[in-house]
Image 1 (spheres, rainbow, N blue to C red):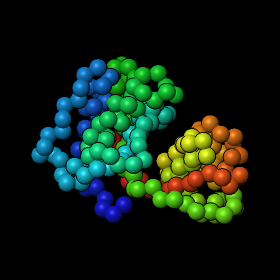
Image 2 (image 1 turned 180 degrees about the vertical axis):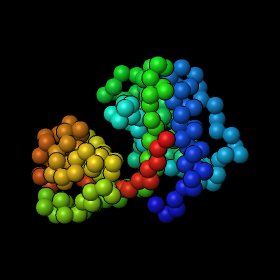
Image 3 (image 1 turned 90 degrees about the vertical axis):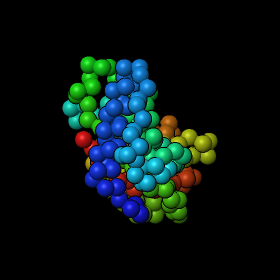
Image 4 (image 1 turned 90 degrees about the horizontal axis):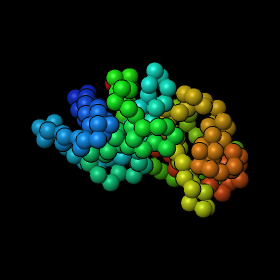
Length: 190
């Protein structure tokens, strides 16, 4: 990250995500963030993922890799989408709202990772630091945030699961025909 968000900016984004989540689950449109709380960093285009957990277990995670709207709006949009549109889970119910914890990940711009062999790819990955995006020749794509390294600390295991998430063969990463990008995140949570 070129510049880190301040503690107050992080609190603003978490409050905005919480309000958007609650409004979205009720079927309402979230109220805009007060202009007085929108610093230049929050008005600047930014890419984010919002992750919802319930008792430490994943309950929803949605985001984008490329910035296309102000960071504050991006976080609000993805808080609602994580609750209602993550195909892996049923929509969040209003009864669950008090049990959910929100985590926001602000992404750097993804950078291509050039590699010459499966071994070279493994050598260049930085567990716990890099988020990784894989894309195959048919256009399928999947990503894991850097936080996923906590559950999948072995590089081979991480890539195997990421290939499966993409809908490819678990060992597709060994074929050398995937496009790989890495990025980092500034992560914070309630």
